[in-house]
Length: 494
Image (cartoon, rainbow, N blue to C red; front, side, top):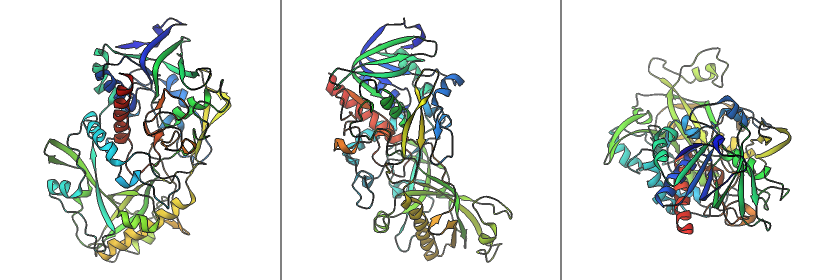
């Protein structure tokens, strides 16, 4: 059922088996899976079906770190959340992303890739993809297009599949409208997490609307699916009973904020001989269960990343126009000096999307003197990169260039300043890590089941729980983790 929280009588207490805050990819996936498990569900969504300026303004805050975008410009407060703008990039994390990497502090998850595979397969169906196939040989065979050679075995081709993209708010609206055991309340904001007297469990979510309605929700289990920034904001702001906020005995709530740094135009490839690069363009192929759009990307082999102590990344390839006098990162004159036969050579741009190391100083904090129209403290995001990240990406591109040269495929120019990349770090709009998953309660916020270490019946869904961000766009993993959490809750609450 789809309902309006403004119609709830002030002072009312609603109840369900599970209460979920946030109707984006994670929240809607959870609600649908728990519907199928026969549980009574309340799904709270701050927005409506369309954008609303007053609701979107609740996201406003400040950025004291890398200042590249506004907090209310990369998340959308409406039914379906950020899937309303999602481009559809899909790829699972690698097995090594879940493992401890000695050269990356705080790496390693308390779950493995194999633990997530069955749920990646379910996630594929949820985002309207069929075959869970990312093996490059199989994709290349179906494509019939060549992949680049790598004489030294250092350069690796990988592949993304593309969801249509699935707009969760549109795709699943009718399903939730028809679900008798799911009540979706629009315009509903959680203002406080109220704990029992011993702080071991959530007693209720205290909710409000912009129209002034206030009500409570009681449940057996509660899930925060508000996004990487807002999950941390609510946990920190619910500090009437515990000064440091809910689920924060470790002091890690809001810490280890991660993005996928995007480096556009930092590296230009001068291709010296005719080469078919069509596998690296978006194209359609037929797989056993249906037709899908795919795109090849470049990266380095796992043993090279490990040997050099590098984070993972992907680089897409697009033809570049080198224009004298440009003020962007591409130095036209330097690039032109690499071109020996301008009639025979073509120039391409590498668009790099990188993992970043978990870094505790990259964090979300509250601006206690600055409140939104609901009376909630706004946040400051101090997004920071570990000092090794830009140095590592410079080295990574150096290795890519060496391998392209070894294959007789030309030369690579990279914009550098000393031993670092010299261009502005842009974001992917992927908010990760502020309620990280850990085996040791001192090292994170939630356990392997996404349950808060400190609070027995409180869970966190979405990319806030990521221990590391990998180099894969997060949506497919967000949905897979939500499917896994739904199975766990179904088993716990039966």
